[in-house]
Length: 268
Image (cartoon, rainbow, N blue to C red; front, side, top):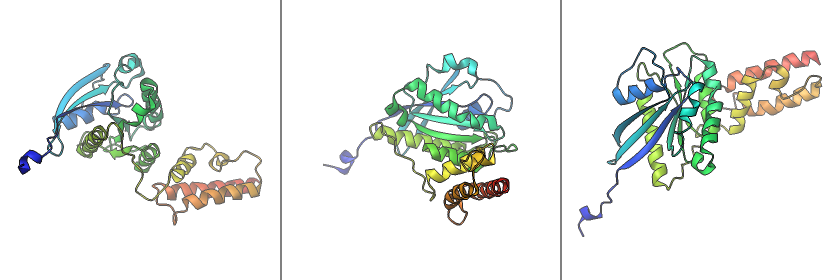
């Protein structure tokens, strides 16, 4: 038997990708930047669903990519909810200059879960979280986006649809992940953080950042004693001390922790 006859032919593959995220975060611009190599400066709201097809070649395999660009406005929910089924990959986009679009990521993830319903199917979807518009003044630090993505086991990229920064890399990672999942019988490879920090550290940093009071930062209620404050402080300090944690945002979170402890001890 010749060597040529032993070569396994990789069959063409068709995959389905969707975009999710608030209106005006740049979902359509990211897709156009990748597919058409151009940036559309004028904002044109997506009405319901935009659909496009592109072809890529990954490791000598032809991939036909069907992209469903979903409108972000809540008025179009009844349109876009028909398109979640059979999704294999998703870009979940927020605008780094708009914090509300970042905090809305949880709602988009919940919508995806509600519409698909089947946990096995949900777990097979390859997701790239995309912090777009890095060319604008930030309201969301890169470390916040990274932590949110890590906490859900998703890939994370920051992009600028205007300059093209990060866009090709994001789509390349997304397509490769979907193809690997298809070849693995629909089982997505887990994306564990390889950066040396834990989910517990991620959650602690997010809690300190998002808390509305010093008591909430330490997980305490008003009237807590000095011993309560110090115990809560020590527990978090072990996780987040900059000498021990390499999680992005650890240093700032530790400063918040120290400040909260100091303020509460003065009240006891």
